[in-house]
Amino acid sequence: MFDKSGSMDEDPGVPGFSTRLDLERAAVASMLAEYDSFANVNIQIVDFSTTASNSGWFTGPDAVQQANAYLASLEAEGDTNYLAAALKVQSVYDVNTPPADQSFVYFLSDGKPTAGDALSPASVTQWDNFLTSHNIKAAIAVGVGGGVDDAAGQAALQTIAFHEGPIIITAGHEDEIFQDLVQTVNKVVTGNIFTDSLPGTTPDQFGADGPGSPKIASITLSGVTYTFDGTNITNEATHAVIAGSTLIVNTGLGGVLEFHFADQGAFTAGDYIYGVPTVSGTQHDNITYTIQDHDGDTSSATLSFTVADTAGTTPHLVEGTAGNDAAVNGSPNSINIIGGGDGDDHITGGNLGDHVSGGAGADTIDGGAGNDILIGGTTGEVTNSDNIRAADLGDLIKGGDGNDFLYGGDGNDTLIGGHGADTINVQDGPHSSNANPDHDTIVYQDILDAGDTILHFRATDTNGATVTRHDTIDLTQLFDNLLGANSTTAERAAAVHIAQSAPGADIQIQIDTDHNPANGFEVTLATIHAPNFTAGTLQVGNDPAVDQIVVGGT
Image 1: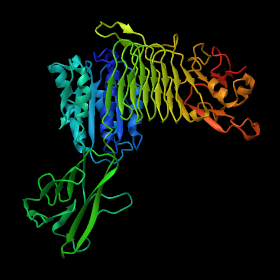
Image 2: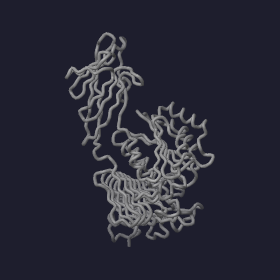
Image 3: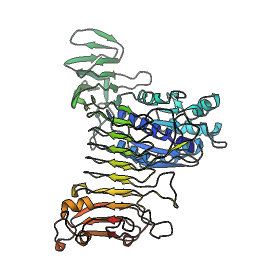
């Protein structure tokens, strides 16, 4: 639950971040990287201001990048409606919900709810009942800045916080939000040997004889067997007796296993909690368990924990200043969370996937290798000022290798996706208008840059007429490499085909790469998603003032 109200456009007073919106989404990216370092993560974002919207569920290996890309496109405007956010969560949570071992809710806001937009006592009860019925382990409420740093603000956050979820207030030290959020991530995996199973398989069963007493006879890890007689646990290597039915022991990889042989309190027989260790390279922790039926017949199976390389996954925070920074560089082999802040900055990411906020000013951003989230920035409040704005001018954003997400924000930006299937968002920034729109340029340098998705491409105004400050797709360098620098504009234009199956459908920009029209257009360079214009609107030529697709040439 992510606040995008108008006050999120204000200066947070943290080096490297021009707006509180930049700060909060960078902090969320840091937290998500921590979760992603040890678990398969499913994410849904509910963003709210006067009303609330949602992203739907992001699942699979790209879930974190998709969630960060969704946050990257949010703009700050409107009121602070806590109630709308809570109701939206309740209405969309069960739509295509993926399975999960543990579920958490995070709520981030920089202010108290607008009058009439708070949760009433009845709404709080409804919210708590929803969280309970959906086995939400905790709802963690985070108040960012001085807008919630009083009794009324904390009381408002308390209406959202639930069960084990703390209330975190960062007033006066908003830079601590990174540490505060990461510390909420508990690297554990939970489950039960009798209910866990791989897709398409059946959980362990006892058959017609039913379970024995005890139903779990032993477990073995790191070469040591621990037997259970129904009352106590015995270490068969040392013959030490451990009272009770709960075993807590270090594993061979340095993890911690808590295993329950019998029902006790909130735990049932077979429950386990595995504390994930930090390892280099993918490794396995294997635990063999033996169950027995009522006749004393036994059967064994292995519970295997695959632990990915977590040594380099702790996010690396890099912050620029309010001035012009010549080098804001991420660590080559870390996940970098980088904030340029105000000023004209030169920012370079690493190799594993970065989250970069350029902030105000004319920035140059190079994501490098990895799947990056690169945000040019928006006009921000000058540090220590009373709403004096620092303009976000034209940024140069380079994705590099990997499947990147690029968003220019305010200003006339140049975006180069580079190799990989990139998503390039040229949506006008929050401080633009139809009368004064942004003019972004997407540059293709090589045919290997193909496979991108372009969002919010501006080719026409709201009346359908071509606007002077339209967005541009520049293929000059691509055709210099493909056809030679001396090829003509006509030759280059003939190698471009604009395809659309029906009005309103996606538009594909296709390229003839073998100079043989008989073979058609072999490569789809980019897909313009959900255009509000038809393919015929796009003109191909060599005049950026009138052509949306510029090919260069003699």
